[in-house]
Length: 334
View: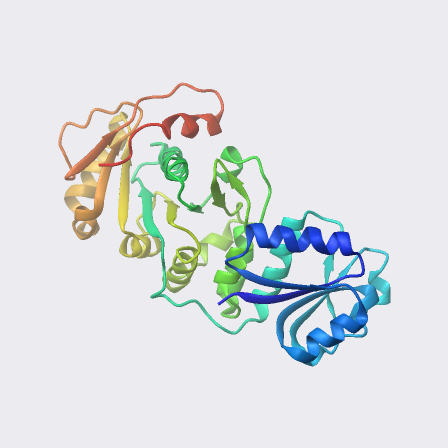
C-alpha cells in the first residue's frame, strides 16, 4: 500500500519538480497529489484523507489537520519562526531526494504498522568468512554489482562490527543508526524508512556506517530478523556483509539467507580457520546445502568443503572501490 502524500505550495514550478521526481523514482512507494492555493488545499482535504501533507508556510496555517495523519511544514530557515513549534518541519532548500527521504523517515516513525515477515520479495545472500582480511566485503560488493548489472534492484547491508562502507562508497546518505534507533524503540515502520533511501553506487543501494560502534553490538537476533526482512521487501537482491564472528546475529542471518558465500584466501591462517569451521562447527552443517565456497585472491583450496565453489583471481588495483568493480565481471553463478 502506497503512502498518500499531498504537496501544497504556492510555487507552481517547485511543486512540479517535486511531484515529477516522486512520480519518476517513488511511484511504487508514494501516491502524490498537488495543489497551489488555499481554496484548492481546502477542497482536497475535504474530499479525502492523506498520510502526509507537505505544505509551505503560506498554506499550512489554513490546512485542516484532521484530514492529515502527518502534516509537515516545507520551509526555509527564515520561514521557520513563523510556523508553530508543534509542527514538524522539512527544509525546503536541499536535494529533492533528501526531502523525500526526510518525509518518509518522519512518516515511518509515526506509522503503527510493523513489517510483515512473510511478504519479502528479495533473494537474500549472506557473505561471511571465519577469517578477517579474506576479502569478504570485496566479494560482497562484487556480487552486488554483478547482480545490479543484470538489471536487478540490489541492496547492500553491512553488518560488520566496524563498517568498511566509507572505503568503498563516496556518497553520503542515511546512517544505519537511523534504522537501529527505530528497531530499538520498537516503534515505527522500518520498511517505509528504508524506501526513502536512494543512495547508490554502481546501481547498488546501501546504508552508511553507524554513528558509533555500540549501535551494531546491541542488536538482538529479533532486531536482525526485522531489519533483514524489511530490507528484503524493497529490493530484488539483498546482499548482507557480515562480521567474521559466528555469533547469534550471524547465525540468525544464516537462517534467513537463501544463499551463503563462504570466503577464504591463500593465507595459512585463513585455511586453518576455514577447516575448523567446516569440520568442528555444527553451524556449517545447517547451511552446507546453500553454501558456495569463494576461493578469493587466487586461493587454491585442497579439499572441497561444499558442493559448489567459485575461484576469484588476485586483483592488484590501488583503489578499494575499483577492486569490486573489476571482480563483478567474474561469474558468480554456479
